[in-house]
Image 1 (cartoon, rainbow, N blue to C red):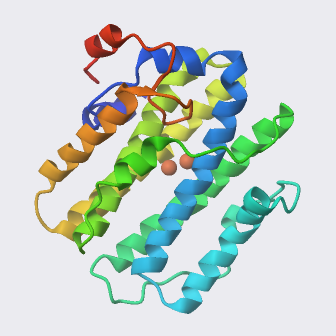
Image 2 (image 1 turned 30 degrees about the vertical axis):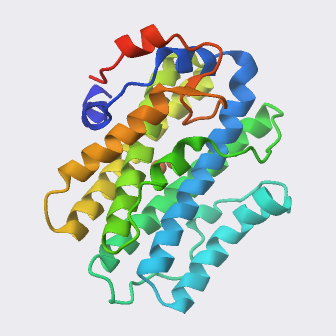
Length: 265
Ligand SMILES: [Fe+2]
Ligand SMILES: [Fe+2]
């Protein structure tokens, strides 16, 4: 596990604050944690799908991708179904191919289709855990985190996609770091589940970063570092909403401690 986490800890510029972990592990906050985690898994699938649809496939493939996601979106946004997906994360009816018009189209499709499949599976796994614990799915407001990263994305291509891919890498890396940080404080079932997610989330972070580097065709470490600073600011400052990717929970923040914890290593 340490081997898996070492590059993640090096990539992130700030370790999840102890105050966030202390808040997240409280039994009263477990429902929000799980609901938001569940929601994040679907959002991760949607974001990846949006990238493929925007940059890499023709309309037939785009429609096929939308149909793949529809039962999940029907459940979450329209309250349709019981939340039983019976392995539909494997339910793509054909092999999705890039349309050949984008320089990293093939890679984007290959990596993102696998990522979507895994995120949908994670979504189902979290939902099953929630169902077993009588926690109903709810639509929670999104945290400031993803929005806070995305607002720094440039508006001209190819930089727009490069920036979005870097943001994707940070979101995945942070998820991975938080699963590992939280696991020891949770009950045995959740502990096992969160540890089981580490490998795929670590690969997702790596895939996003590799795609960004490939598209740029040059060193992007300055841009990566820039988003790393933005990300560190979002997780290290006081946040009035508690979510999976939120900052220091309001009311428990002790800035002196936060300041002392400025290293991720
Ligand atoms: Fe996931
Ligand atoms: Fe992921």
